[in-house]
Image (cartoon, rainbow, N blue to C red; front, side, top):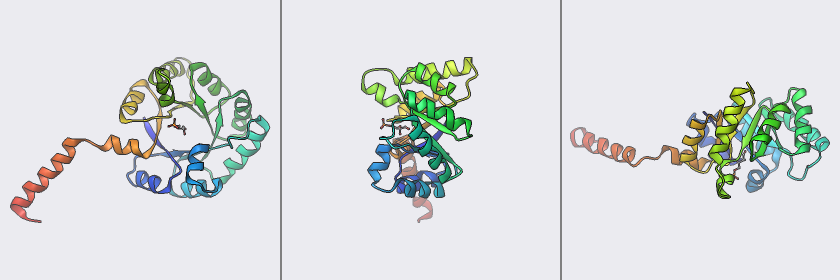
Length: 217
Ligand code: E4P
């Protein structure tokens, strides 16, 4: 399972990219709004830093297929690595069909059940994004959704890539990987959590203490 970083925060993107652990970035309207910057400007800055797929979503207020298609074409022209993120609605599927037929990569977002994932893939989506955390929030099982989509995509040779989205913690990461997700898009805080182990910290401390005792600084 590979990783995208789920943010438009440049500092966080630089940190994760410098560690060599991400192969792309995903954004959404809330993430863009959080940074308070012009969409095109922040997307271009991200694309200049990360050599991988960058998902840019159509405006939250664009709800018709024609509007999504026009916006999607503009997003795709921003940079060669752009992936157009579309909501999994009837209009989003129509836009996905057209954009995919033009060779534009798409990421169908806000997927909460298996049928939505299958329809998104059949409409030509490059990526499908099932939301794990938001399902867990309503006492449903987000990981089971990843398992089911992964099983069904394998049985039917569907090549849309599964991005586990709405990933909230390191346990989600382990479970998504076991469930067969191709990618997980994670906030920077999850990367930090994944790196943390008290025995690693204690081990470093002990190595330093033992080394200094004999060799000094
Ligand atoms: C996916 O692409 C979304 O940007 C994201 O993972 C949503 O996560 P949230 O449920 O934590 O907002």
